[in-house]
Length: 192
Ligand SMILES: [Zn+2]
Ligand SMILES: [Zn+2]
Image (cartoon, rainbow, N blue to C red; front, side):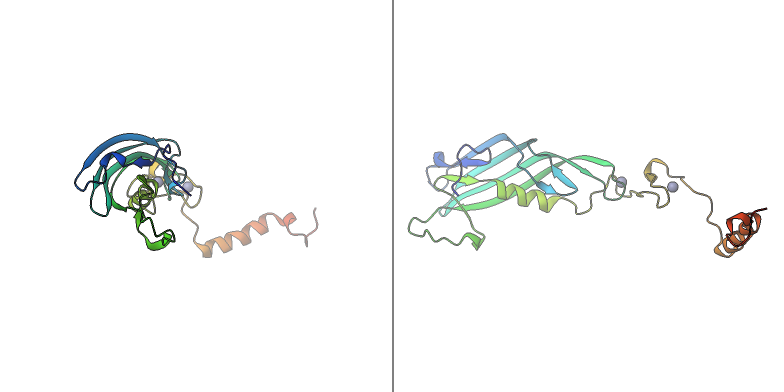
């Protein structure tokens, strides 16, 4: 698949003229691609990602250095409260010039390549964003989560409590008492 020069995350490096040492600074905004982030925390698709990038021609290709910043939406893994946050990531990658007589290029060599004068920022952005996200996003560092009995969000109600659980030995006795008080529950005892 060839890169589309009109795609928002595809950059044209032609103006560098492949002269080592020539540089361009670019600042621009592009809509976030789909699935940028992790299940519980991601950059909403289509929301603006702000790039600040330096393109620098070197002997082997073009060195890309820059930052990207974007908004994040997600939810706390403990209490499910929505999280709105911002992210700023740094990246640097060398995009190597294509070799004309080497069409059977190893795609999985891990080397980023230019296609003609075009390069694709998307894989770079994706890696940088995913690496910088917490695996377990929390609404606050010490989020106490949800009450295991009723599901209330404990951060909203730190003094949240239920009746002291009954001592299991008494609970057994109480059960017996209740049966005595309500004999009709016992199918073996006829109603009066
Ligand atoms: Zn939380
Ligand atoms: Zn509760």
